[in-house]
Image (cartoon, rainbow, N blue to C red):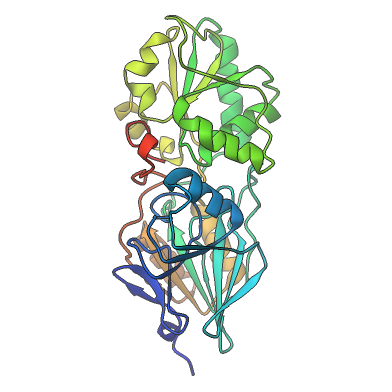
Length: 349
């Protein structure tokens, strides 16, 4: 009987696979890494070799430069790669463009590392695909019963309603550069907003990357070099920090909005000076997390980087064996320290 820890075990560097000799989303440079997605708390530069989806590799190259790793090893969804007898397959995670679950198989044992994931529709990326497994390693960013996120379309409808109610005011939406900004743009397009959407310079490179990958964003315009009092009745997207600093003061009586799952906590919105909180998350909320566990029914759930205690209690009450990994180095909803040089001053995405 193979013990689960023989295939994957937590280490200070991150989850490590001894028989395959690789780490998954390591927090420091390692000889061989499997990267689930491009956010900087999961995708760091300096590894010897990186296995990831082509989109995640493109994101890393855009943020860190083409030489971010000694060797890049692209793997499409569903493609299986062997590492010293361990099979690695990437399955869609529904988090951001290119995001993947790492499916690890060895000697009849299957373990799935979710990375970050959500179960809701997202027009900018492939939806989450459940994979039967013996062990499911789940994030727990919103792992408390209070976190029940509203439909994304409803939140975008609130933004459009505010634009109609206050046509004399600019609407500045704080959105992280990777994933959230592009999702807000696509959802606005689906809601019928056909006018140009203005974007902060820190978002432009990843917007172009998404378009190269086939995600149509519609007409965009730079939100720089505009005269004071500009953008009345228009939408502008920027890193969350920018909507609070001097950059935002040039626009017409701005309505400050912020797209984040944490906007469900009104105290956070007040602390940030957000007038229009948009509860829009790229992570699974409590119902999505618990529904995923109930659907998969693995022999064990391993819970990491988030509100582990609430999910451990749910598992106990529902007869689901579970344990907390308590890995360090992964941040709350997309708020990892951005390490791309031109992002440092303007975003945490």
